[in-house]
Amino acid sequence: MDKPIVSVSGIRGVIGETLLPEEALRWALAYGTMVNGGTVVLGRDTRPSGEMLRGAVLAGLLSTGCKVIDLGIVPTPTLQLAVQHWQADGAVALTASHNPAEWNALKFFEPSGMYLDADGLKRLRGIYESGQFRRARWNEVGQIQTDATAIDRHIERILTCVDIDRIRERRFRVVIDCANGAACFISPRLLERLNCEVIPLFAEPTGIFQRDPEPIAENLSELCRRVRETGADVGFAHDADVDRLAIVADGGEALGEEMTLVIAVYHVLAHKERGPVVTNLSTTMAIDEVAKTFGVPVYRTPVGDINVSKRLKEVGGAIGGEGNGGVIYPRIQYARDAIAALALVLEFMAMHEEPLSQLVQRLPRYHMVKKRLPIGAVPVHELLERIKTRYTAEEVVEEDGVKLRWDDHWVHVRPSGTEPILRVIAEAKTPERAEQLCDEVIADLSKMLKVSG
Ligand code: MG
Image (cartoon, rainbow, N blue to C red):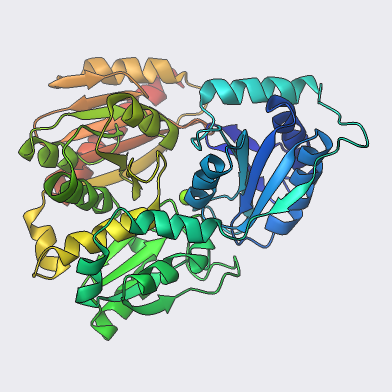
């Protein structure tokens, strides 16, 4: 039987194939041992396998003596806030995020609410592999406490960080695409609190996804259509665990997930607070342009929520996130929070008279192309080394693969953490140039693969 994939984003696999209850149980035993039988917050998304995994994970945690605060179905950012609220020793989220319905995953968190970092995961893996688990005596087995108010607290927290009256006055008409995920329980409610006219789409929390749960433009055709047909001011889309937000402007154009962070960064710097911006190496260079306008620095980290969140905290940044639609607003929390992002976008819209489709014309916009290249058994470092010497770039960043940057375009070649492939991401001012740049690098890499193979 194949094992689940273990990476910085947790333990994930296909239910009944690579992710089995006995595996989930063992990882929960390891985590319960790592937190020494402390308090652990537990939540899940809407996937049909969630209840089964919950059972396995509960058994593991309780048997190591953990007290479990069970939130039921909640967005991941809601769970991350709840860790701080309960001053818990950690948390487990059961969600495969934007992956298809047959997938599920266990994700682990620190007491701060941030994801376990690479060191934390290494420690957890060590305990898992040792099989040396904490075993509570019969009278010390953990108990479950239910918390049904985590979503309410999350909504209230967000409402303290935006100008509610200003948004309410506008009575925005909003189509909200919840992807049949955990957003069904929070985003429509937040929108109602903001006096929006809410038009729900895929808002049944079944976990049977009627569209691909990844909120990239090509999966949002139904949302675009609804926004157009209803004359809505804006459309929003989430992934299944609500840490990503994509935006469709009035008129029905999907802005692309990179634009979510660009809008959020612009809005926070222009209207809320000035401070450094933190994002990952693969995120659009429009962020640098916006930050430059306001005279603040941009720090770039390897890809991954935990990397961005940690750096944001270190530098006391005003706003950060990832180009996949994950916005991190420190006044709410150091985690990608798509509900917070949604409120920020509405606040941005409320501060201007023009419709969103016109507002975004004022923001810098680039075009990105992402491709993947299977590399078989050829060592990644050899390929990266040769790419590095093959081009003359203005800046070469050797963190998380190799990134070559020029004045108005860049290419980032990074190995996948879980498959024998390279991801090649290129960005330029026009779609054609981005495509050409990406293909050029892939052609070079392919030549090297032929020689090596
Ligand atoms: Mg997600």
